[in-house]
Image (cartoon, rainbow, N blue to C red; front, top):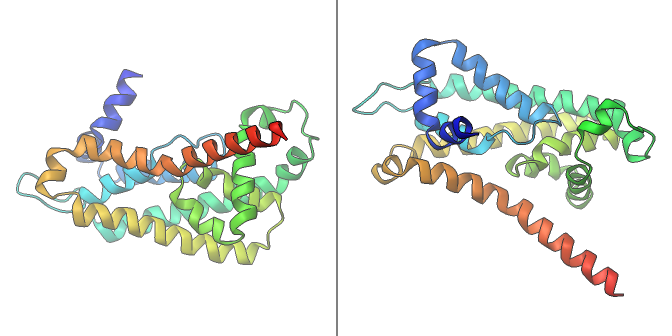
Length: 225
């Protein structure tokens, strides 16, 4: 746990150190992280937004270090990872989702691995926003991992899903990496990089917290009735 917290607090240092020893390996590692967060419903806890911001910051050379990444190459790599991740998640949802939502999955290993509350929350998000949920969900931790699964379970037309998938991945990677490129090396940000990364994590989790509080409020109101 201590090592995990240290990695989150000093993400830029750890990524730069790994990149110095594994020039191509770091691209593969980041690809795997983004793919896992978007493609595997058992890994919604990975730090997508803060990781992308850090990658953007490390894509700009400073007076203390050269650029760690080519911003265009790393962006393309992560966009592909995001698209493939959502595509895999969609097909997993298409295969397993209907059984799980109908309660037919029983005690299968995949049923036990899924967090039903997260799944139901993503389902509600998808029902509210329709196809736009594929794009909007990219910016909401946990939700972005479950929405493509729900889309597959709901048998959303794959061509329509694919368009939203590509657009959402380009927008998510572009905004987060672009923010890192533009703001990640500002003196104040560099001095308080740990606080900024933690702030990004907190802000990105706010929609989940708001939805949780609203759900509790709705549940309380319905119990009173």
